[in-house]
Image (cartoon, rainbow, N blue to C red; front, side, top):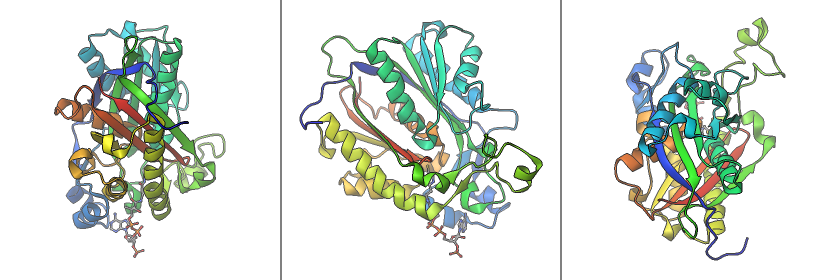
Length: 336
Ligand code: COA
């Protein structure tokens, strides 16, 4: 696409909401069950604590709380929605979709409802999918949720993954902007490289390795990750994705008021911010309190940033994510 001011999509984020479990699990708590230390986790990742759901809570339960918070802020009723899209690496079931489960929990029927599978990039993928439908007029009022209960698929005996993850959900509502408005979504960039699929994977439970005594014995239903390789990929791709989304919006990093990156590792975030010379006050960081909440991390960050007055009308907000697939995605939004 040509450089220069891009035409806005005509779709804006009307409201945001979030939900996290009450239960806090600190690094010190993990020291008691794993061969790890608060010092190792903090210095390697920036994480101090994470929220973990009780056994009987699933992703749709957090999704419902986040969605209701966003609906309340917008003054919308669930029946006002005509599209529900959920991004999750930890859906309630393989099917029905968590979006359909959420729709039922919201007490409505009729709107389109489906899930997007793009692991930690899921929210940006879902946002772009729903926004495109609003832009095309297929839907007018869309709910987009990133919801995760990663604690359910983490091997709590594996220190290399267990310390990284947390549970939570974030939701945004989308609607068309007024004619001629320059607000809302300005650009989106999505990418994937399926050759890296094995680097971050939940091997069993699907049609390749259906759940069996053998898959359970081998722990194949747990999340597996090659941390070092994912780290290298992430540092490179976050910068590349941000650059491409800004280019598509006709903007540069100097225009960015708030950088809201996927919260996977503070060192990855710091490296990507350094590449653009973004000062710390323009980078939203909450990984210390939530760990990596996958598809939920960006909408949780947006909800917190807005609640703390860090997102003002007209602000340029840069969202960047990467994750299993391998996938990546970035979006530029003029806040409204
Ligand atoms: N506590 C203590 N030691 C740990 C540990 C833990 N929780 N986890 C791993 N270690 C050990 C390793 O066993 C290794 O020991 P060794 O040198 O004796 O083999 C050592 O720490 C260093 O491991 P390494 O993997 O090189 O550490 P790292 O600096 O790369 O940090 C990650 C590990 C996982 C934090 C880092 O690679 C990372 O963040 N990767 C990206 C992960 C990510 O973003 N995933 C989500 C994508 S959406």
